[in-house]
Length: 114
Image 1 (cartoon, rainbow, N blue to C red):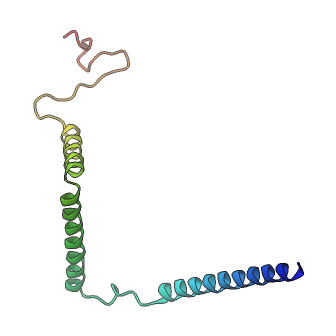
Image 2 (cartoon, rainbow, N blue to C red; image 1 turned 90 degrees about the vertical axis):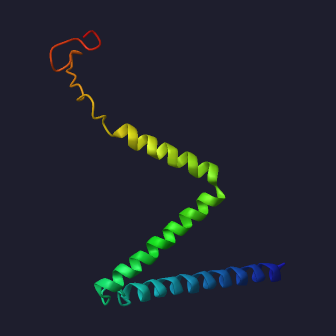
Image 3 (cartoon, rainbow, N blue to C red; image 1 turned 90 degrees about the horizontal axis):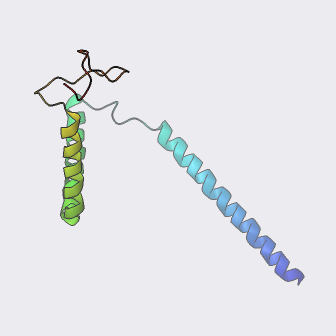
């Protein structure tokens, strides 16, 4: 019986040491990444714009792939987005009515009666 508890204790210590090594490794990696040179600091403006364009093209490619795979959902989301944008813009016909606290419009008429 004493042997089983000793084995469990050794496994527990080994697990703790492994977790400690992993934690120290992650902290070391974080320090290395944070202390590393910023590649954008040494880039010229043209290089930066080229890098941004690559990322933009990658995003467009991912969006296109998702649209191809989920055409129905993507179409629905795009329709809802365009509907929200369309409803958010005021129509050019009539100016919006200013409503006061007593339910009257800005010109003194009751709303809905004029």
